[in-house]
Image (cartoon, rainbow, N blue to C red; front, top):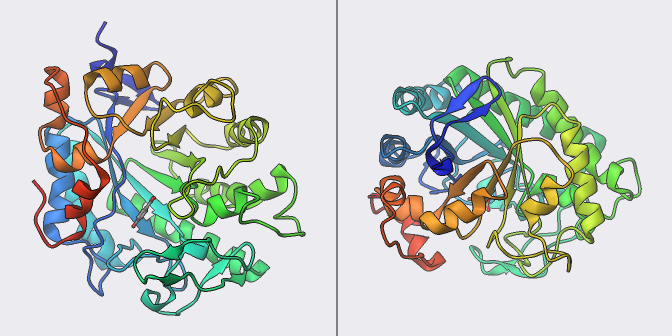
Length: 354
Ligand code: PHB
């Protein structure tokens, strides 16, 4: 059976295939936090090429401290929401589903691009490496107070409300890549001694509160997804979870949340973790029945099929970005190249995407 192009039931949705376009940032927005029109249209083109699921770029959840890169988008004002409506409609017309991904950068934020010029995080420690955009160290973040925690949760809630109003089929809470939620989950960045730090359960508390608050406004006919990873975009060599047990405990805690799928982000999906001989998706599968979405090094039919042995849906980033025919090329089993990260830098220029 052709599993890759077989339908998948995700809550009330039937995805037409198992292929999704990964969330990818273009940093194309101006002051209005609305992406350039050609950037919005790019998502529609990928749906027309056959992807069963299309993610937005990571949407910034507030105007205070969430933003980490210039030109990022928000979904908080009527104008911002209205800009996405035709995009969502066109994606849905193709039979694909549209998911809004949202995040707060935490200690990875760039204060100067946030109107309130602030950086906040679970603990006042920075990544070891410099910010590649500013070429200087990340500023030491303020330790998040109880007020900050509630304020940030409100940002996630309001952004999700914007997405529902825009017509999105679902929202994803970005808990991966060393951004704020991931910073709470990991002992590498969370040194708190209150209810939000220490044990795995405590480090999970912030994710729990975000998910619970967002879930309250997600209608029953829409999806709620959470993304997780063991790697972060800064200090990439660091394993964000200390052990297999810790990772699996987090997956179990996520499984008790009102979410419809877990998205596991890797750099290379086949890479084994924690000395177990198993990859991140396999380790998740051992402890959860939730549908799994997987990305990392999927670039042709063979790699997509291999990844689907460990997950229910696969996502492509660079290939979907750079090859407008990628889904069709996978369907016909065309010989495809594996793009390098540098090739994807075109995403950050004013050049229109294919
Ligand atoms: C990420 O999830 O790694 C990410 C999100 C937004 C960006 C860049 C990277 O602008």
